[in-house]
Length: 183
Image (tube, rainbow, N blue to C red; front, side):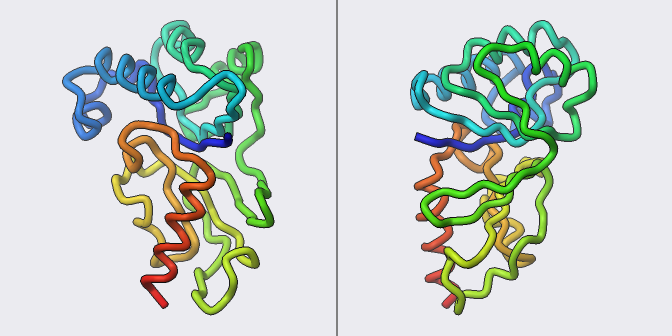
């Protein structure tokens, strides 16, 4: 299975990160995120993390990252510094894909990026398979459709998905349902 998420923020000890996610402190957040990830993801699954893996203590962030199952692909975000990128490149089962990339799945076209990006106008008259869907994070919104008024933008950050990665099939179903409501 293929999953997407973003904005893990391991080591980011700021209440504005962990409190809205329902945690009392950064340690509880990290344990909760790791547990929820590993309940869902197995070693054969692929997970695309759309930026902002860790902050502050890189070695601690790496410890957390290494506890996560699956083949992990990274789209870089604003907190993924040159020093962190160098460390990421040496991690097992981890692949750095750059700052953005196209992605195709079952004739659906996606554009993966950390930041929301305009890729389509979300015209409900056009078939979904003819449009480009932007999967992104960055804003820590709880509303996966918060930018849908601007275009075909779907948020995969943990904050919008009960602190878990979301499957590609769920993303497609969510978008189809949203487009049907707008038609």
